[in-house]
Image (cartoon, rainbow, N blue to C red; front, side, top):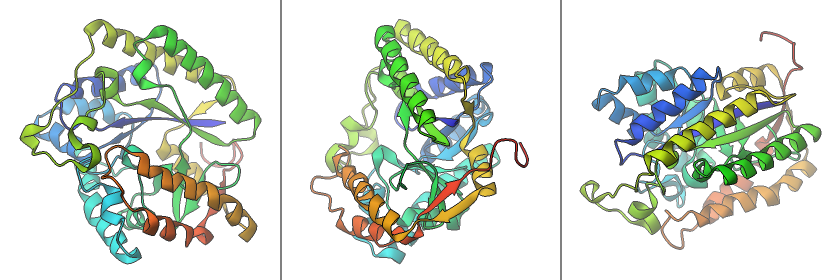
Length: 339
């Protein structure tokens, strides 16, 4: 079974979060493992402005995805598509996501392998917009096919959210060990159930550093404070940070040593998926998938950043109207074609 290790680099408030993003990338490199870092466009522009080539060099040894241009700064992806018809939503998504993609290309010399929505949010028009922008895949996908796994929706490769370690607990060794046992059990079950691929979310470097997320106090419930009023989260102690990074390293070591597991970046998975076969879902399979897809889309309303009573009906409708574009992706057998 293939797994991909993902991390989200998104804190656009605290400059000290630059160092931990670099350090996490270096730990992975030292352990001989490549991950996919989904980075916010504004973070990349900040690294350029601060001349933090050490950060971009460390992350550049890994796979890079886009985590939107501004993440939780309003209007978020749900807000700018909630009332849009299909084509207007596609155009809006293309215009708002293009700056992040350009920033990544400029800083890393290549485009992102994927796009991941902020805070469990998304809109179906983003898929079509990304295809037009040259981004080949979506991670943390809200669409699914029966049995889970990799699929296409509106033509774009989609990787559904999978397993996680629990980044808030890395510094608490007993809780981290319990999380690792749960993760190992879940991955063994996934393999036994015939899954081709599973995402393992390693966390947010800024959450490893800080005691809370950066966006909640600033943008909760539609808040739009001036940049000068943004408040950074409280930093963990040096002791807790060192313990967290040590347990992150141990996590990577454990995952690369799991029998029957092969770690691949999303860019590498894209290559595999493009050599595989895409199989359209039957009408019955679409009907089977529809309730779970609708549940996932409606669950976006729980994100604390969204304004109260954000209306998701058009997003739900656009999604369900296009279930006929769902395709299950069957990867080539190991050893078939280029490595």
